[in-house]
Image (cartoon, rainbow, N blue to C red; front, side, top):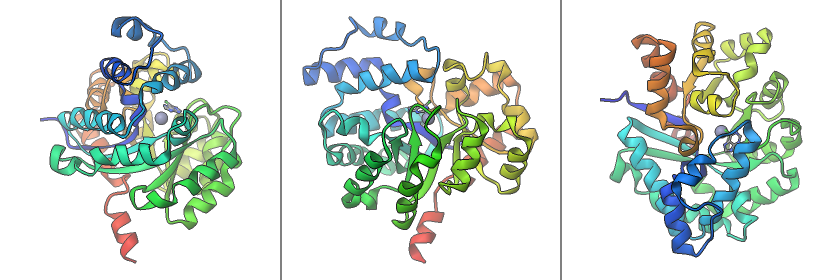
Length: 319
Ligand code: ES4
Ligand code: ZN
């Protein structure tokens, strides 16, 4: 039996497996620049975040209809459930789809077809987190937030993703202020490729309650001390860090040192179709390669629920 856990860092578009990509391409008459799933898998050799993002955005072309998003999410939830995931807080990238001519409604209604039935079908509770693309303008993010008004009952929070370096959190100050006023929870990718200052800025300027990745906090001891003191959760993604070369090998991953430092770490899959595995695969990899004790693994699983927006947001709504 896999450990029950929550997945807190998962881009739904990053769960698009090659087989489903080709199935959707055929269904929608979209031509992919790859002959078959084999050739597509060959393209999964990334040298950094940007080289991955290029393929990630390119493959999204196959997602066209509500049913496509429903099929994508349902396939993810089935896989996650099989690996012990009981709760999933799922990122999506509306701007990437709106730019291709889709409406926000197609994306949210489609995802909701799967998420709305997930507890019954898979035993997995879910939340949706709408991410802004940080390499797009703040105005575009604000427009997206405004377009989401009819769907706010289905969106728990906002996040910030895509190319990090050169796009500091400060750029999105007003967007996050508006999101907070709407009652949305706030997270942001920070310190994946970007410097530790971006983590500090995400906390101070955006008011994030959780940091996605946060790996580079280790370069700033004062920041580490603060993250420990304030119990700010970090959603680490070990296999992603290897594939995008944030660490040299998994054996070099600082997760054990981060746990020893008292950081509230969680283990997540990021873009599992691209990075070699789902939540359970990430747990297995850190257990086998980093030699984490059973106690440490249980701590990681417990942290995933502590760091989640479960319960808490029901309590908040009741207030
Ligand atoms: C992402 Cl690994 C990662 N980092 C930033 N943005 C992303 N979008 C999808 N995966
Ligand atoms: Zn991510």
